[in-house]
Length: 280
Ligand SMILES: *Cc1c(COP(=O)(O)O)cnc(C)c1O
Figure (cartoon, protein in one colour):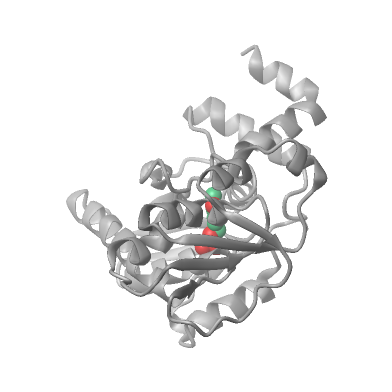
């Protein structure tokens, strides 16, 4: 990428029980009182980082946790691992079917992936941490990069850091149109939206790609950091191929528990790359 000043914000370290940015997004539910709530209800995929983090939240708050999925792969049922296994250990009730609409104040419903307005509380804290760091290190020109799923993290970060930095992101789940729609659902003022850079190629979320594994290995070797395998390979390819200027801050948003299954799948599929990596 030529010589650019690159910093990494280790949000993967923020809380060992939560998955990086999910700790930010669920912060509000951990630090406020909900005397009536007895149960948390959400939905999404049976492997998601958000699901695991919500299971931690429910356990800490002594709430029941009902989680609705479309489908659970039979391989996962027979060999529970990663987010799924850990969420079950935390007492998650996993239910195949549509999430019902529950009008009951003892039930807290959270949208898929923690896409909620309440996520703003934790993300304002993240923005303030970055602003403090900028001030103490006199970093005036700051461009922040992070890959998006629902776009909640990127949107609120941009909103709270608007006077200090520009946030760039790339869609990993849908395309740029989808991501823009997500932004509008949370914030109608477009001036608060992050800059979207589209990936050069169309990737299917959760599929294995040689390029993704290559860049993940390269990052591991060069930074000695383990990045997530779903969002970060896309994020880094887009960042390195972009002309975003100094100074750049990449947000490491965690997600490492979900890597256990991805790593095993990658090691099986691209044995040559794995052998090389293992023997370095
Ligand atoms: C959930 C997650 C994201 C996406 O966050 P959004 O707020 O949904 O955009 C990115 N990276 C990792 C590692 C995640 O777990």
